[in-house]
Length: 513
Image (cartoon, rainbow, N blue to C red; front, top):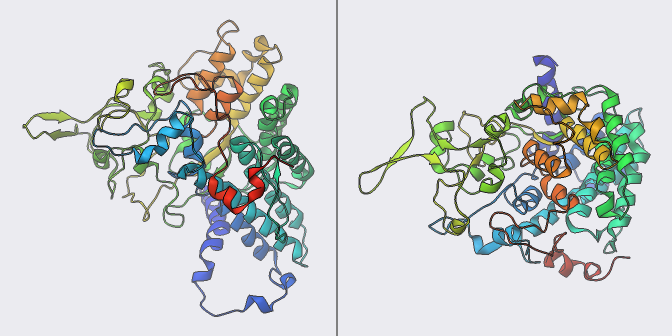
């Protein structure tokens, strides 16, 4: 896409999303909507589309500090939040519960992740009800309905993956407390919902559907379902997963970027690898994408011209960091070693004794410091390019669109599905599978080198902090293993339903219907 096209992509996506957020603030004329019949609310294509944008806005909190991304990422081996020498980041042990796979029903992050998922489902149900109640008809109405149904399927996919048996409803008008359904039931619902609606979706990525559900996302979600079918439903569906990956590839509209980091640039709308993103704007969608605050130490404000003081919490674990070779360009996803200001000068502090302390991120430190780390311990995430225009929490947050699914994952899912069918010798000859290695400065795998354990490690390096690692560790049978600051465990393949949800809906305390 050219620059003009990219701008239109972003602006259109933002118009759908931000209108849902801000339109009520621009006109103070009172309209009593309770006196207007439902079928007269939305009488144009644009009105229905803008209303559908309300469901998309529910994705925006995903990468926040205490939402779904942090729950599934901190509980994996790719991220850790050790408390500091001064006690910061212990937070009554809520992060430690995730690290040790001992999450309680009162854990705040678990609760807010649950609220994120089911708030999204509720919003989709509402939009579908309102869209269906509108008597206005036009050629693209079925597409809007199909988009929101598959968006709802995405939220249910997350719920099924994270908590297993979960409440289920598709009727916004039903006043009864929703029953708890089995993971197998939710699996079938998600699969059927996608298959029944995929034909209504756009195939070609354009400025009009940037940040929206398309056929590529639908096929990618089906591939994820089938890849995890053995865990979620007790049946292997490796060939189906391979076929869904082929469907994405056969569309012919996506490709691997030659530069890995182009997918995560400040303005990453140009990526032809990104299949589905959460759209952000530095001023219109504040309070959502602020990884600079989550991961960086306070002194990094001089590197990136930040207008606030980073919180110095999230980092990759020493063990995970050590899986990267020095020649792997993806190692640049992490800040480590001597740090510099915007002018290239070394950063340092002067101690109380007058000593010069050079600001160096120490990527590998002992597990004994899990409860007493130094403020510069740990490699910090810089995978998403940080702006230097004065980022400030709740004022100016990150402009990058957050990548939920990209074409590289399709290539690697296909590789895994084929390997599990005994086709490793064919996998190593797939040109795009080779490109995943060569574009980051590594040699392609040989059949002798490529084992399932190595594929899991490669998935870790390729998709670090993208929200897939927990699912991968479970599928590969590694979830209970010991890793840095985590002992061997044998519990919590899924997280507990929050106590607040059970208190609100007693159906959740019993067995699924």
